[in-house]
Length: 257
Length: 318
Image 1 (cartoon, each protein chain N blue to C red):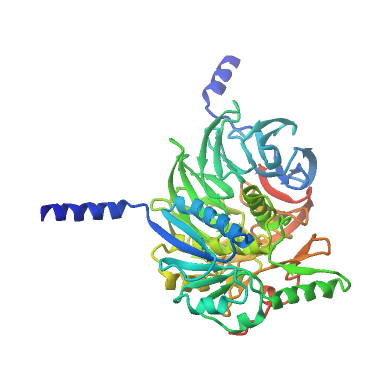
Image 2 (cartoon, rainbow over the protein chains, first blue to last red):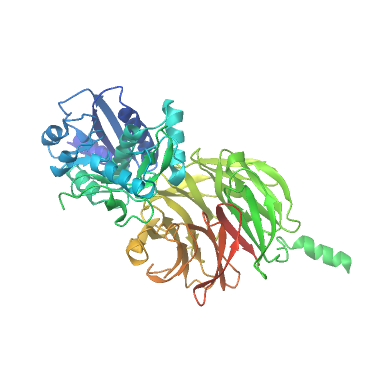
């Protein structure tokens, strides 16, 4: 009895002095994906933050389902499979890192968070640019490896030093998803998967190192600025273009509001 | 008589040089410092200082102006009287901002190394390197000189460092992209700007907990607001906060953080400084390449002075 009491007391002391919370995360998709590299950088950077606060994230990568039972959130580079994945994720947040289909946003899935911009968002960014420069040959994307403004310089430098190639949109989406999860868990280390999803959807000041604060629309789409890229891959500018009415909501639709 | 005078001079621990009435502005993209006469608001000199000057501050006796040169991994030292760049001191990788301790030590942030460095500017010795979060930026020394605060922009924290042993004593999570800090004169509180979150937070220094946050600046001022520079007025009644792309400086109540007023400045206002009497506020407008001069009583911009390219930080010696 005394031994049990002692063990119990010891356990309580250990729990009280334990460094804090550990969270498991899972990635589903190809091992070779830039999204996975971005995720890895984002997890490492979250753990730099977490070292000061006693929070640690661990990422497991898998080429496909099933989702491991203890993962608090899921990251996926799986075009065409996000809706199924969200349905089988048991209420956990499923981060869509690569599928830009508009119908997926229009489905208003409760637990899908689309970090990569939708096709509609990119089209709106291109039209805003062309309204200013009618003959421009231009595409829109989430990220550009040569961007320097808004501390993009710092993130591009860290990615290139870590992996070699420049950061692209897919890598940025992975990095952002990991940092958003990390920052949310640092603030609320007592969260379970359902609380984490709710906090992510409520957050209004997420940092994508693109200047304006990022947040999720009711459709699950990440509200974010985009970059405009010229025919030789060069960075032309940002959208929303200056003066576009509606700010970040001038890019994309809001089908679920 | 001369001997007595010399003795007195030697005994006074920190003589402060006569004010030069000069305003010093770092030009991040111009690799220079613009010197302005605060009595005439005229540019007196542009000093070429080298790669990417951002943070700027005085030595305790105000005889030197220090400039963080990010691309040269150095602190530049300008003689405040002759306006000559005297030398450059190695300061670790990519120094961005700093604060000077009353004992003369420079505490600086090394942006791409995630470090805070304590540097003796006389000997050039690096006294300590403290590991902090990603992209450290704003640095402040507490009024009693016992603690140094460093913000980490990408880790969303204010790190509290003990000066005695260069160890972290607390890490305060605040809104996204914290950039600068200011202290209450009694040292009981500090304030911090969060650029991406759009917040200004007030933190109790005994508990290192946030006691008040204003999250409504974007609604109350304009949607493009990004708080950056922060200063308390000499009388302690006003907190001035530069609003970045909000193209304004706001006046907040230091206690409640309610907005008391705003003054329109130029495009992307970052660095701010106050005259000693608190009657003038100077604000650096990056893409405009100007310094706004604000009458703080009327809360009006009364003049803009051209600077170099992308003015970043500003200090006044008056």
